Length: 151
Length: 388
Image (cartoon, rainbow over all chains, first blue to last red; front, top):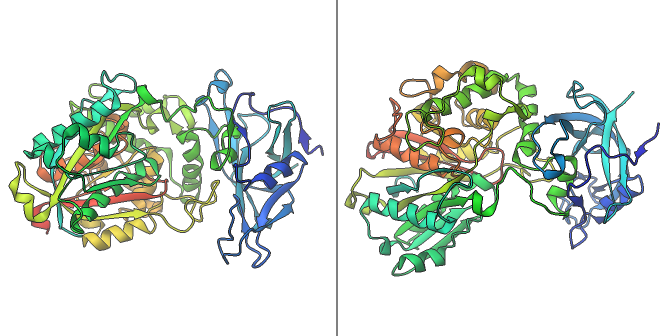
């Protein structure tokens, strides 16, 4: 299966994600550009952590290690958005956002879009896999992690 | 802090649709504060402190200069949480009085969305970092999209039906029809109109979402010893609590207790200080950012178990005077005014005074629940002299 796409689920013009000035999340965003999902896992106590922080919330060791994980999980919750809360979404129509939990990474959760028909029935608990969505010509260039139902 | 501080004055401006205020935001704040002082019968120059929340732009030192107050002794801003701070701002002001830092503190919120922009529309920014970077590129931009997934998960876990959310909306609109201050006065809502209204983001219809408005509202607090010096029957602060549970602020959507309203630890704190339980509370004002948040917040305050939400949350149970738990008796954020929840504090004062336009049968003990699903959240309980 092709796990990358250069076609965009949502129209261009939404805010582009960048790392904070202090660089906290730079490994995460850099990883997505290379088709890798990097999240924090404390080297001292093994706790998974997302979003990133400078400290492990469990044992207080600083600078939790960035660890690559397989981009698959299951739908923890979802929503179908109709109202355009941004000028870029006017006349776009509904779209689906999902909250995906990663059971193999301490049940950390992340938000993305569910690729496919925006009117599809969505089931909490459904298995999904990640698709890296690249925006190489954006300024600055960036990548997102989207999700689709596992075949 | 129980019973140590009293609300002696309340005041608000006319409430407007967003962008419809003829006055700029700071002028709205001044009008509400002067109205609250007039209600109390107090000289505004005797105010010696200000407390607000959500980064209110009407800054304390400018207010003190504009009003010519004799001195400024406390100036408190509650961190973060949007409307979750509406009760925390009262708690912070009361704590300052009990601690002896100040004698007469105004708590207020002023908001002119026409002048400064709406919460429901993301602005024209090009890049984003921090928590929003994990959300906005996926179209999770404004509060409706940020909170719908929480409510969806809660409905899934507890079998809550859309009708429970609808009952919350219908109760607010019902009460607003008796309240001439309400922006939705004269604009009733029925089940059919709710059901056929457009989706904003499933599971929120249009009427599950708060309005956006211009206006300001304020209250005056003094120590209990002075409470009898003013024009109205004093209303006592029985308790207040602020905060959230374990890692409620973990980005993005990684709160330990995700499908909740942030009151798992805060509600027990409130009941402990106030010395009351859910069955003592006669009337509740609960911040409706979205109706689903009200469902979760009421359950977390022990008015019903989550599995009972469908049975408890009916229009009959939620309306004054004699529903089981009259809710949002001024119309609240949905139908009176989205004064960022502060209109709810004023309405709770009116209930205890006995001057609401939808007076509850039992109103000696009145609760306010601020901004569900945010962190820090906050809540408070007011009571009459008889409850002390």
